[in-house]
Image (cartoon, rainbow, N blue to C red; front, side):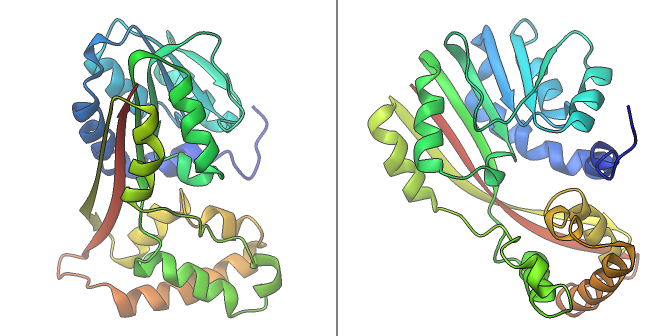
Length: 259
C-alpha cells in the first residue's frame, strides 16, 4: 500500500483500543446479537468492533464497511475470514435484509440522521436490531478547545467550518425511531478513561478521531503550533495525577432499535 497522510490512521486509533472497545461491548450486551445470522458493521475501523460482535455471535455472516482503506487493510489482517467493503457508509445499501446493523462511533461523522437512521431500520429483517453508539462530547473541554484554537490563529479561515457541530439528544432519536420500531432503547453514559502520559495522552487519543479534520488542513509547522496551543489549554482544564495519569471524561449516546 502506498504511504499517505492517512496510513497511520488505524495504528493511531488502536493506541487506545481497550478504552475504545469498552462501549461497543456495552452496546452489544444490550443489543443481544446472539441470534443474528447476518450482520453489518458500518464504520468497522480496524476490526475491533467486529471481533467483539463475533464473540457474541460466532456463526453470524458479517460484513465490515469503512471508507478508509487503511482501516480496511488493518481489519483484513486481523479478521481474514470476514468480508469487508470499502465504501461510504452513508451511501451503503444491503442486498437483502440483515439481522443486525452495528454502527460503533461512526455515525457522528455522517450527516442527515433524520433520513439515515430510518433508512437503516428499513434494511433490517423483522425483529432485527440497529445498534448505534456515538460520542456525545462536543461540550467537553477537549472538543471545545479544538474549536477555540482553530478560531484563534493564522489558520482560522482554513479551519472555519471544520468542526463537527451537528448533534441530537436522546429524545430526538427516540421520537424519530419509535414510529418505525417495535422497541427503542436509548441511553447516555459517561466513561472516565484513565490515560497514562498526562495531557499529551489526550492529544494522542484525539489525533485518531476528533483532531483529524483540523490537522488534515495544516502543514507540519502549523500542526506543531496548533498542538502547542491546544496542549496549553488542556493543562488548564484537566488534572494530571502524581503518576502522570489523567482522567478523560467521555460521554456517549447509545441506541438499540428493534424493527
